[in-house]
Image 1 (cartoon, rainbow, N blue to C red):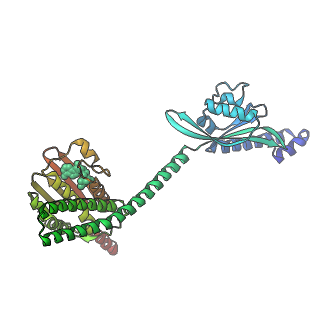
Image 2 (cartoon, rainbow, N blue to C red):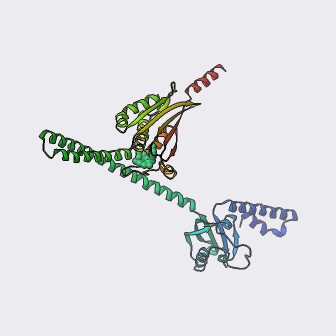
Image 3 (cartoon, protein in one colour):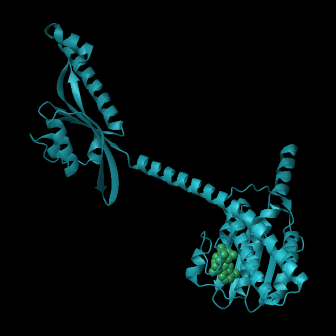
Amino acid sequence: MRKFIQRALNKLEKLDRERIHQLIYDIAVENERLELVLNSMNDGVLVADENHRLVLHNKPVERLLPLNLADPGEGFIWELIADPHIAVFVERTLLEQESIMDQEFAIDAGGLTRILSCSVMPLVRNGTVQGNILRVEDISEKRNREARLRRAESLASLTTLAAGVAHEIKNPLGSIGIHIQLIQRALAAEGIRESASVQGNLHVINEEIERLNKIVVDFLFAVRPMDVTLEYGDLNRLLQELLDFVDVELEEAGISIETDLAGELPELLLDDKYLKHALLNIVKNAISAMPEGGTLRLDTRLRGDEVVLRVIDNGVGMSDQVLEKIFEPYFTTKDFGSGIGLTLVYKVLREHNAEISVVSQEGKGTTFTITFRVPQKEQHLLDWHEEADA
Ligand SMILES: Nc1ncnc2c1ncn2[C@@H]1O[C@H](COP(=O)(O)OP(=O)(O)O)[C@@H](O)[C@H]1O
Ligand SMILES: [Mg+2]
């Protein structure tokens, strides 16, 4: 009991009406403050007396448990608790005069599973137990956060492990490739009769090595953190270099190139290496979408403060179901696809603050549209001049 109340009670008969009035008022204020504190807590609190009857509870516990307060009557405190598991737990703990910390219960709250942590502690005064406190904490968020963190951590360590393995695979692949070339050369020099068929076999092995190497390189590219450095650059020049690189491949595949590059494009913030790699993936996909040959069209134009690049093929196209998934890691419709190409494209473009969208029609072809934002360097200069003039 508060000291001032104790003192006042001791000399109650000597107090006049006004002092008693004041005393009751002070107690009421004090009481209200305590109530406010209890109701402002996140945790639910239930207090029972030594006969296990409810004497006090806060608002949060009504929401958390929930409680049947319609008819508190003379019943035991556990009879007010709606959830049967928690009710049994409270009954047993109180009857056995135990004190239990952080017992967890999963309860159904309107179709949502919430995890409650319940503790029962004795209410001790002057060395005797006067009742018990039940504290209820909603730890669902905490649990979810922990689970998310654990998942992210295990995914990260798995990715690191996989990247390590992929890296280790690259070296022997390179060495196998070199030795096959040596064998091919030796065979050619010896002029062995069976040479032609063996050369054919070696050629297949070489192709497979190349495919494996591409998977590994793409994978490493996709999982490693990207160290993009954006610098002012000319998108048209980059496209031209890209086309020069795939020129021979396009010709062999019977694909003709159409370009329509805007004359005066403002410089964009680009990472040459990454962006070229990403666009190469889009072009390679276009090539495999046109097995019978076709036309690959690249165009750029300035639209407001954006530069729009389109890569258009008239290949096999995609169904809506495929289109939905193409940016997902490891999604592929190809027998020997890695399904990483477009994931990587997405990642690189995000680093460039660029948007990508795809329109496709089965049997007609596919258009990838990439929108870059023009950096506002002229705009900044303008602002600066205005400020200097003011
Ligand atoms: N230009 C395109 N035309 C038709 N389908 C495409 C095109 N580009 C991508 N796709 C579809 O998207 C899938 C995923 O592409 P990508 O991530 O590059 O992986 P991969 O090329 O290894 O399959 C491809 O398997 C293909 O089904
Ligand atoms: Mg691809």
